[in-house]
Image (cartoon, rainbow, N blue to C red):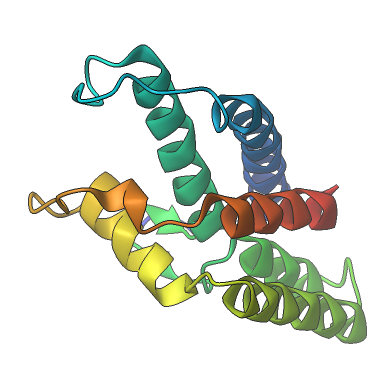
Length: 162
């Protein structure tokens, strides 16, 4: 049985909460990037590495969720920026032109992320494998993520929502 479609207010609250969490994660991981991690220690026992990894994983989860295409599933409506824009346009809270302009900004942001070395499709696959669905994790998954483009992408996403 499918959950009921989320209201604009529910989507707005979720997207704004995610944006605030994203800003917090990005702000907290930034100073950790330049701290030395324990050499030869597993990330799980190196406090700096562990904290950096947790904030980075959370940033990936939030950025991907906020940039997902709108869908309805067993757990309800995808709480993404575009889902919020679509619902607001459908209810007449924003014009179709306003919605289209913001969707274009979202597409441009993903293109900028790709132009700076990121890959949104890989980011989504990483999220699925590391955070959501797969029991098969990558050997060293965070080594493939470029933190600077991810941080910039997260920052631009927060700015858009704000």
